[in-house]
Amino acid sequence: MYFNDKGSSARVSWIDFCLKGFAKGQIGLHDPRPFVLKGRFAFPRLRFSNHTTEVMFDLFSKSRGSWKDDILSGLTVALALVPEAIAFSFAAGVDPLVGLWAAVFMGFITASFGGRPGMISGATGAIAVVVGKAVQYGDAQGEGLGLQYLFTVIMLAGVIQITFGLLKLGRFIRLVPHPVMMGFVNGLAIVILMAQFASFKLPDGSWLPQSELMVIGGLVALTMLIIQFFPKLTKAIPSTLMAIVAVGLISYFWAGSKTVSDVLFEGTGSGVLSGAFPLPAIPTGFIEWNWESTKVIVGTAVTVAMVGIIESLMTLQLIDDLTETRGHGNRECIAQGGANFLSGLFGGMGGCAMIGQSLINIKSGGRGRTSGVVAALALAFFIMAGGPVIGQIPIAALVGVMFMVVIGTFEWSTFKTFGRVPKSEILVILAVTLITVFLHNLALAVIAGVILSALVFAWESAKHVRLNPHDQEDGVRIYGLQGLLFFGSVREFAERLSPVNDPDEVIIDFMEARVCDYSSLEALSGLTERYKKAGKRVRLRHLSPDCRQLLQTAGSLIEVEVAEDDPHYTVARI
Image 1 (tube, rainbow, N blue to C red):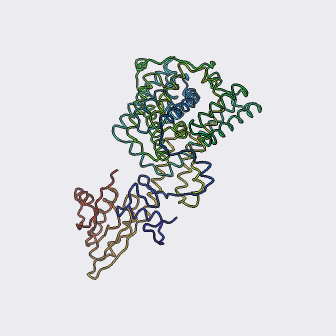
Image 2 (cartoon, rainbow, N blue to C red):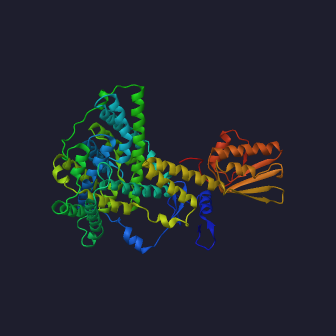
Image 3 (cartoon, rainbow, N blue to C red):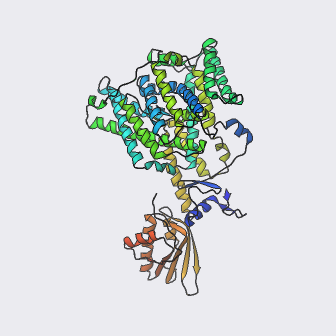
């Protein structure tokens, strides 16, 4: 793949173009030229013009929201939150009300004070899997202690997230490259898709009878058609809300199918959704503190905090891209922490940002904080007073909504990247996608993707260090260095210089290069010693003031020339 930095017909690889731009300080994080930089990683910006694909899958508008849109969208999200919160409660091994109240507190607090208006938070599967281990350990210590361990873990995780935000560590989301983001959303879409098939099965895991499958399949298809084509009639009402109401009425009067009450009955033996507003309670008094319990609680809390932050910041970045606005990561970390702390205090299982529900909100027109607040308040009303009505919502309608979310979430342009971007970038996308799908650990997938991208970038960058020798009439040899000098490239750089064969005086010019870390400074110091032992002199030209200062502080004997056109940059600082 080739790009051009001046619009001419010259052909240069995008890696060369990236390294050259970095060395000259001409490329930044928001450079408008033909490729995108995510943190320290380069990835081409591809533009596809397949009209059919755009029409079919362009499900998310970038328009500004309104009070009406936010309120109606919030109601839609609240309806979709119910079955997921119940399912995640079962996954954690707790009562459904623990997950439902977690969704209320998480949704209300993050919507009110978070850094990304329009993003929905609640009980999530990733958090449920992690805290389930603490619940099991607590139940093994004594009857009823599982919930006490759960609430303690969630409150401690909230404190960790607040600290994370106060230290402004949310900015590290910039280090997530675009291939990781693509793999993340693709894997998430597949996970959401796979989760929906449970609605077509009996509690023992076998498929529903053919007649019931046909009814549910028909209602799912009808839901998807309404969501897709209802906006062509009117946009006064979100198509998702209209689909849930219409399919719900059809299911209630004509084609009875599996409902929210049926899901509750399968898990608890009671199909009634009801509960009073919880009261705050400090759970630590019931726990016997020792080394083993402390290790379980602290270890689980750290995992919950990191998983929640990574998923929330990734969701924030996704919503930023969809709405072409910018959220605030550090503020979101603080809000997530506060929400988790209060969720644990009031008997909730905690959570984080929910990509599926957030996409439903955006698809339905929700853009402001009102949408999340309305969703949380509506869910609280459903729990305390609206249980009989919510219990009649057909699962088929909610499955149809999630199918449309899957279509809108998946990066269909991924298939067109094959053959157009380096194979290493395709490898990163596939790795993140597969880890997400098979391990169901979104945080691990993102971390693995970032590490893999960093290794690929370091490997490619190390191959693009060039030394161009030029002999002057006075016998001085000047080496023009091009590229990034860092831990991955210092060995090749040092091996290309031969003090034995070089003349008595050598100059290394860094005009088109950049010293990136302490490994390169140590290599320069060692290089000086080699030339000194050979009885020769080496000088460095066009180093930044920061590099010169570091060399002097380290007591290096390197001779550095100072000129007016020396570059200005720092070494290894984020």
